[in-house]
Length: 215
Image (cartoon, rainbow, N blue to C red; front, side, top):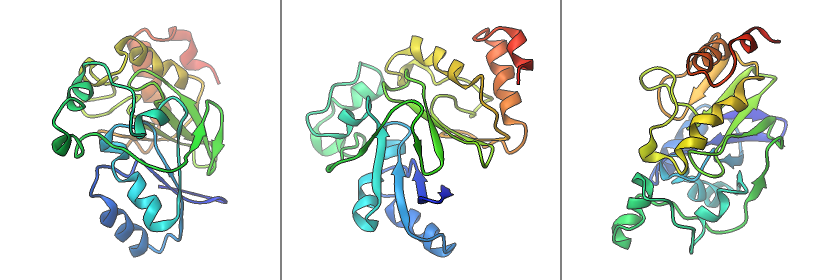
């Protein structure tokens, strides 16, 4: 979650069925009205509850332009990764795995600012995968551009729309400064996060070593 002058933004509310848990959390902490539900990408473990929250609260949905078609009926087919296989399940089962939404969304582009967050497009995991950078809070919400389940790494090929592009996507983060990093999978890093991400990029030879000292 992120608060700004535009109101409270919920980032990636999670699986279908997470509506009540999200609303209880917001109400219990008196965080105020939800203004935005922002998705880093369309996979159901991030986007499943998005439309239900928008319906319940009047919040607006925001998603990158390249992922928006995957939230509509008649959506493009994912490639035959884990997500592509899920789409070929019988409809009664697939609806628990494949997210759909109705209504209009704000379509995001690289460099847009929404609720005080700057959009960083890093396609690969999905065509419209993004990170969200808060300069004022020195924080980065990474979605699934990187995860931190067993140390910082890119998602495995089994869940990527384009594994080659997913391995290159973190290059988009090299110029950012952020003390805190919030991952879609794995624990957050609350101090020195950008240094740890740059160390990963250097180790993977995704960026030249000398860029780690640039300001």
